Length: 349
Length: 279
Image 1 (spheres, rainbow over the protein chains, first blue to last red):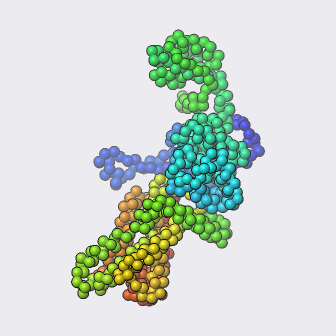
Image 2 (tube, chains in turn brown, yellow):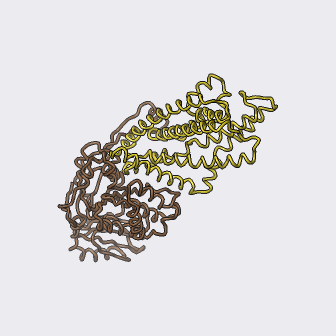
Image 3 (cartoon, each protein chain N blue to C red):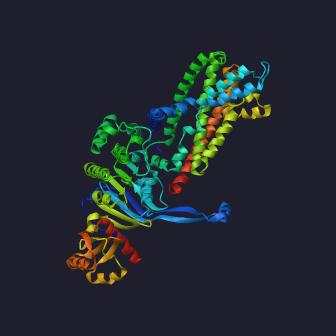
């Protein structure tokens, strides 16, 4: 596991809220055989297999951290959230929250956490969100005055004040997600788990939600654990990043540290004219003298990763080979950095 | 789940039950068309059909069916339909859906006993259906005074109501149990439809239990559906007495205890299986 030194806030003095030590989670599942014959065999003899969703997870999350949890589908992100939040027990090692075994949290601990699943609404479809919030107020025993104040503030910040009284079914996806987020913060939790909260949302809604999360994390010191496939979400909100791959932690460290590693390289995106020759595998050896790598090749778009000192020489080379309509040079975007981490690990494996 | 002092835990659960009741009430009235179809019109058609069936069977004024003449059967069917409306029904609980779709997991991170929220649904059902039945009784007795059932005495009406309430709670627990099977099975709605049909038959909604063969009627008297619909109907009409009422209370309380224990057991085991399977 790669563990970089974290920066950004004082982690040394803040309290550890979440702790996983050698945590693993295994599921038992049976293989469904194909075909009509397989159907009959399945009825009488099932072949059971064990799937490791998480293995040897070492993780420590402190008060006030904003942690991004990323990985491909099936990497174990949601399972990790479920183990940490006490929905499901770990199969090996330990998962603790607020100093207690996560799977044995008491009501007073549960009042300190909240969870939003982007694809699992906790608000009732046929009712205005305000009705569901009132039920949540009672579940979390929030005093009425605090409830009113927090609701008003959150609704204003997320720009949904006028929609509180509307049936949830009549709201857009973005508005509904904002309501989910309001509901998650009404009881002022210490820890909030957000599982793909911006999935399917438009740019404006995503931006509003990100800004709200960052503000609330800074103002109240709420610990937020966010999973997302949207790298913009991660870049604009998280200070720490944990990358999961096949149930293992591949990287755990500060986002700044991660980016600093690749400051010596640049991403060059080239948009070709329709008349231009496209990319050919034969060009590959020509990249070596520049230390460049092809990251992505679409019919009219090429993306290269190039060492910063070589950029000046590499750009004229591109103009010689291709008919270029547009070209941009930037620091490496986060998704490219992460892809490189995956590739390095695969290469090392 | 909670480790707070029992008194404060019960007080909290009661407060939450009140809020859940109001929440469920708003849910059921959120859709006017849905309310009219689901709450007002549900279980009206079956007794109407049965009245025509019995009319076809009992052609002459002297004809009898299990000791009932036609007007007595109409009165019984009206009562059975009214009491059946007060019973919690399978569609009243969407727990199986919540289990299938994984929504139930969110409650595991909340400081709440899920059953309290489900009880809110039951309380809402009783409140709404009591109002609906009261409304239908006023309208029905004004429109069809000659057919409408006449109560034997005030205490008979009270006894009938007590049995229906206990029976409705049994039906609620039964629904909860069938829904909880979704932790293991994918055919809950089929089971639910089957259970609903068996329940209607055993409750005497189609045919009065006392009109059934003696051995069958004797067996059904140990089942809670009989004491939830058929027996209250006959109590109301004065065909059964206080002794039968007391027997009914005992049978229903025994069922409440058995179903409650089973509910707790299945819920705990189901949840363990659910989370073990990765939700």
